[in-house]
Image (cartoon, rainbow, N blue to C red; front, side, top):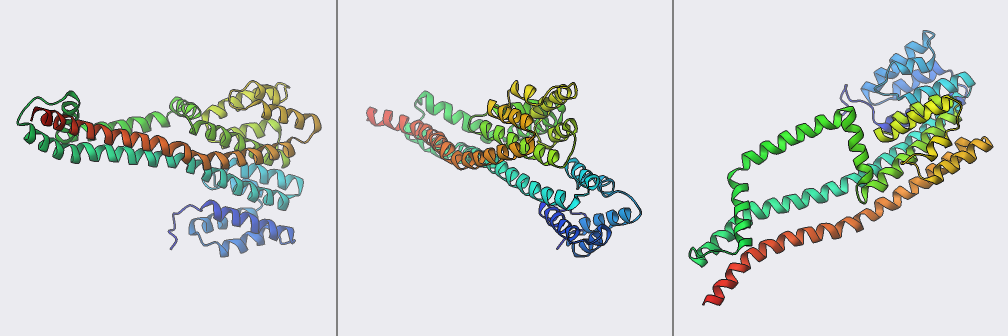
Length: 351
């Protein structure tokens, strides 16, 4: 059951875009095509939006301008490609490219989320096991050990483990406050412009995760840039739009700086070759595209290559992280076991 305020999913927009391209290609007028799609759109929020767009276009507004009134649904990439398609009389072709670009973007986003979710799940499991051991297992075992030793001095490791356990069970409210305040502070920091850039830069440096973040950024840059270029959007505008579409402040900053150089007459491959984010192969492929006039075609190949690289990296991340988690959890269990066996061993020697 759809709720009226639910924004459309990417799948809804892809279906809308593909169907609109098909109808326009078949010679159906734009207003009639939009009205038809409005009647068969299931998402109520999107249905109302398409209805408003239909009325605006029927009233003489350009399709791209009508879309621009709904930035919560249609991205600058979408709007600018439609604008270019209207100007060039190739709206149906542009819409097909848009649908394909949206599908690819959705796939790369899903892969990135998979790459980020798996480590978070593993860390959560490890933390949960640690908390369970320290708040449930250690206190019970500690009582047993204390009874067996009759108040004798315990080994250092045992005392440390029991003190940590005692603190965690006695002052749990302090820990809760610390977690809540820490989460709030982290969220505020991450939302700030400086915090976003620092967080994104940190992602690039993370073991196992960093290379995936880098490849996702390159793939999204290449495909988005190629889509806008093939639609006839100017190079500088393409760079500016692409920079904000990637979703990484570090890459955005570098691309916006590159846009200024391009506006002053330089080729994009020049600033890209000096970038810390883009490897030499990207700048070299881009230079070839600029020399041959096939930048969009070359960048599509770059996007395909890096999307395959992301697939391989996501598949291998589990084989990298699982042994680390096993060692970490084994170490925690080993510490607990050592803290218990130490005093029992001492007691047996005394007997």
